[in-house]
Structures are given as structure tokens and as C-alpha cells.
Amino acid sequence: MNRKLSKIIKIAILSALASVVMFFLKFPIFAPPVNFLEVDFSNVFSLLGGFMFGPLTAVAIEFFKILLYMLYNGFASKTFYIGELSNLIYSVAFVLPVTTLYHFKKGKKTVLIGLLCSVLFVCAAAVITGHYIIYPMYVKRFGEFLSFTLAWKFALTYVLGFNAIKYSASAIIVFLLYKRVKFLFKW
Image (cartoon, rainbow, N blue to C red; front, side, top):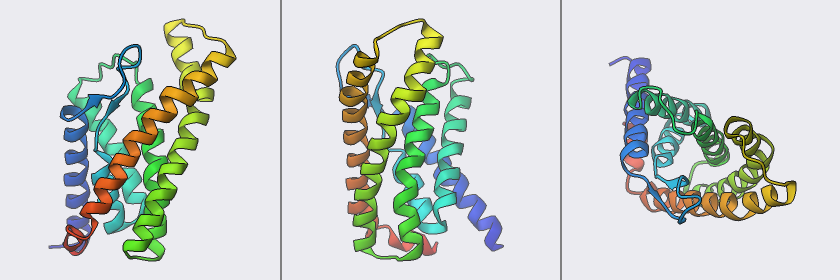
């Protein structure tokens, strides 16, 4: 089979798997009022694709995952796509550091260091973009208003805590699976 066609098929499979996991295997970790923050492990597939083909592939899988997720929902979103946008931003912030490092130097130690960097990077990105981009979009869309202090408190508690838990759990899963599925990288 042609190498390009094989790569496209693998990216499509990983994107579909990521989207299915995002759609069907998610659960909230905080009680109301933030039970809309749901953990899923779809990033595992993006990271595997990134390890196979590089960081841009990981980003592409994240993009296709969100697109497929929106197709499953019939382009109806209870968050008016703000949740999907934040998922895309945070997921890209998660997959880029580790897959970029891995692209230049392969190995279990690189994966471990890269995953740690990725978790820290996504947490920083979540607080900054959550406060300056995502939260203002929710305020504009839903007409809610919180003070600057309350917005920072929300970003530093729920958003940071949620993303630290979600992406740390994904990092642990990937690290544990890395050696067991390494044969797929040559598939």
C-alpha cells in the first residue's frame, strides 16, 4: 500500500477513535456548578499519532476529533462551540510539547519528560486562555458577569484543577501504554 495512503488511513482511524472516546467515554469530576467539565482520554490517540508521524499529525487528529464530535452532535452544542474550542486549544497545548520533543529524540525518558512538560504547558494555557478568551466568550454568549477577581478564582481553581487532573491522567495512560504499543509506530 502507498505510504501516504497508509498514513491517511492511520490518521483517520486515530481521529475516529479519539472522537468516539470523547463522545462516549467522558465523565465529570467536579460537582455542580461545573459538572460540564468532563474528563475523557481522547488525547491518548492524538499522542500515539504524534509519536508515529510528528507534532502536526497530533494537532490534525485533535482538529478532526473535534470536527467528528460536532458531526455526531449534528452541530448542536450546548456550549455554542465554546467548550469545543477550549478542548481544541487545551488539547493542542497538551500534545505539542511531548510530540515535538519525541520527534527530535525518541525514547521512554523523552516521553516522560515531554509528558511532564505537556501537563505544565496545558495548565498554564488553560489558566491564561480560560481567563482571557474562553471565559469572556461565555460571558458574552450567556450574559453572565463575574468580577475580575472571581474570574481569576474560577480559572485558578476549577479550570486549573480540572485540566491538571485530566491531562495528568492522560499522560499516565500514555506513559504506561508507550512501550506496549510502540510496535504500532512502525505499523
